[in-house]
Length: 152
Image (cartoon, rainbow, N blue to C red):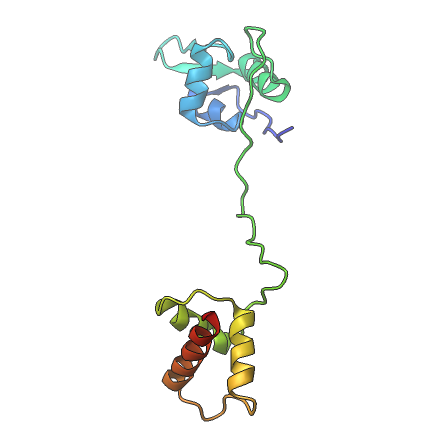
């Protein structure tokens, strides 16, 4: 069940009622026209639509129970998550090292789709003494040629 905010005002606008129900204003209007939510009352002097405390309570009850004023069940979408779901990596794919991330990007720019693990293995095979003193362009060229040769 969603955590709905309790009402704090004696009257609220249609937009505020939609927010309290965690719905877009458009969806709230559609559900009101379908008879799921009660229609707002009109302010006597301004004729502006509003929801008093009783109607607010009824709307929040409908949102919580999923049974509209028309007696029909209604489905509501979940409220969107605040933070996006983290991207999960394959178990065998390691996060590239900071230095190798540039190399991986350069290889992808050359049209070679590969993983960080494969690049790390290629570096270990080509440069057993490490990357100290190796030019970045030379590194990209040698790793690219090595990985192209593996494809054949």
